[in-house]
Image 1 (cartoon, rainbow, N blue to C red):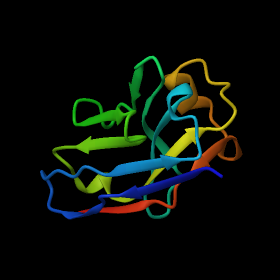
Image 2 (cartoon, one colour):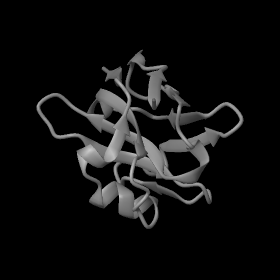
Image 3 (cartoon, rainbow, N blue to C red):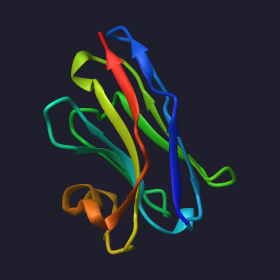
Length: 129
């Protein structure tokens, strides 16, 4: 039984930082793509950042330079360091894992994923004002 549990969201002022984390269990963490997605009110869920078992990383253009994805394989935990936050970063942030292992690389996974092909966490709210 795969579980992805996010924590570390919150409310910050513009320019501030947050570091949500995602604890994974029941999953071969190191073998496939994992990453962060977000959904703003009234908008579709979008990919934010992803990493694969080789350490390859991809970011959405809107967060590049400001966000850093990382993993701690020993703890089966994924992180997203978010800096210089702005109001457009507000939304629910979801941790996800590639269920099928069909992605060629993190960028491919971020742009070609289907909702049903991923495991999803319950999400953590990030509010920037």
